[in-house]
Image (tube, rainbow, N blue to C red):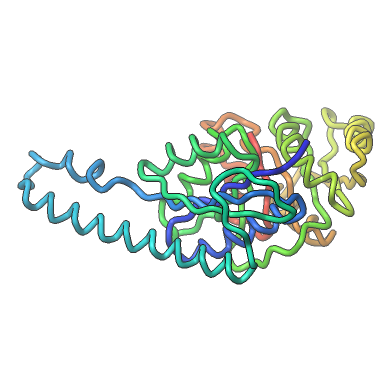
Length: 289
């Protein structure tokens, strides 16, 4: 299994740099191609339906012009960040698949509802890199992250703000024997196979015994993954916080988790590890649903 394509959706804000750097860190060991995609809504899709709601056509046209100007400025900001990143890292820009010994990159613009754009584009790559949403990004960052995880069928890398993303040498895996965790492991296999160390972290209980955990670790060893197990008490405290703390203590540069092991409705009511990781992540996290 190989990792050859990475999607970096950007919005033209300060999060662009973190997303680009994470995409490069993932792509470099595999000589992958990074698709940088600037996303913005079509202003007419948002504003034109307001005609007949107390606003004249001329007022709507003025608002559309303003929205188009804002969209153009955001795209220009994304393109400037892309050009600087490409030049700083001496990356080759290509438009079509080509034989290359290193990372190649391209830039595209997707116009439409961000959730739909990301969901559709993500299905055609191996990994998607998104920013860990905070209030300063607004709702689009969360919508993009959830669309990537829930609607792509691929792995999503959630990157925290203001955290340098070094080369991935040690990976921590949060294993709870769910199908989502199994999907995350399958998508992460190219990264796991090239890591110097993989730490499998599990909370042991009546359903996930040490014997079952050992069988799972063996399944990674069959792939040549340098894996070992580490157990912890999952009966109290924040599972998300515990997983991230254990991962940082082990010196891991990446945490791999399944996304939304319960139904999305149940997670929205009772909270969950996925939502905690999305909003409170302290190290990069690779998730899949």
